[in-house]
Length: 172
Image (cartoon, rainbow, N blue to C red):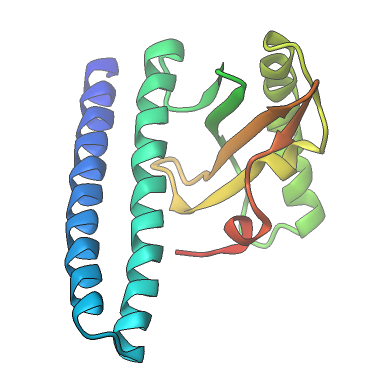
């Protein structure tokens, strides 16, 4: 099972990196076309291309983090504390029809201990509630759980969320 999981994660990373290169090449072409003859339609195309590039970059970073997590923990889910940041992913069982409060409590229950331990390893304390460090991925995992990316960065002696409000509420 672990060899299959590693192969899947490596394939996902390779696919994400190839997709990122493809989007970069498309953006370069769009940028050159815009410089030759700027129009409002081309400007809108550049804006959409920038969003696509950002999404592709996020996917590549998430795939690389998932592989690093798997190499360190033997699981697709967990947290890594390195270079003044904490990154990772968790999976939470959130049944359909769950209230917002119950959903947030399930996330808090799953994340509080592991996020606190990760923050402790780099010598900082949490500056916000654990749910502030998460961003939900679209869809569910193979077991039907909600998957949340976790991201934080060190500022002084505190760990602050590295997830913008816009990113938290954006749906792909």
